[in-house]
Length: 304
Image (cartoon, rainbow, N blue to C red):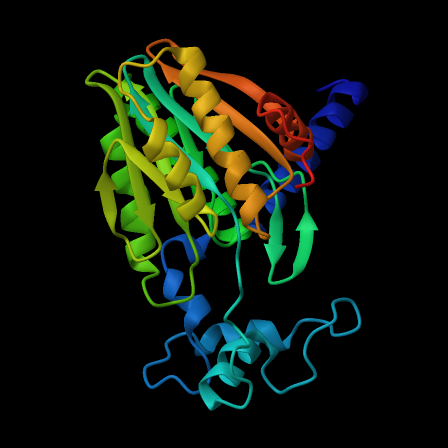
């Protein structure tokens, strides 16, 4: 016979294990394998997501406010297809991100403003996603889309590393992201990302957009402020420049973009990708302070 305290302990362990099993079962990530579910509405010709509408209708309206319509699950998509609210889903994004390859690696520089049209939602957004110790991703477009899928990419890269016992290449990581975006093509994703890193072949920089297109290059700038950033970047870029000069070029390019583009702003963040990983060189410099600093260097007041 078991002692009384041992019986008690066994019961508590079984209860705890059952509770954990229920918690795990409650997490539904089936949408990862069927991304089309979020883009289908009740007016779709071939809509295989009808079963999920039953789940949506069972949501307690009092506990979570939803649109007061018969199908809140597909409300935005239905209104868009009916054409009664043009521009409903055409969100105006704004940002400035850039990356370039040079002799000593790659420089990634970004701003930190999140905006929707004339509304500034945040000045402290982290637009560089640290995928692993040798890979970085940037965000431009929809903050939620970029943030979620690049963090999902980080999980896939880690799974690859555990299975193969070696780090994933930059090309393979960017291809994974492009394949994910291709599944969502035409379904409302808004992403313009860069994937930068160092692998066995050295530094690599890729740009991946929300239609699944993927480009390898040495200079990229993505976002509403990219024309201004390109102007500064192209005028001073030199593949043989020093790390200090490259960091300054990235910082100056982002500053000028924020000065001319109202949808970019906040602080400048600069990362350096090298053979030992990546280093955050500038954690966050206020663009307003940079404005007065650069004006002073030119012998100007700053309010000209």
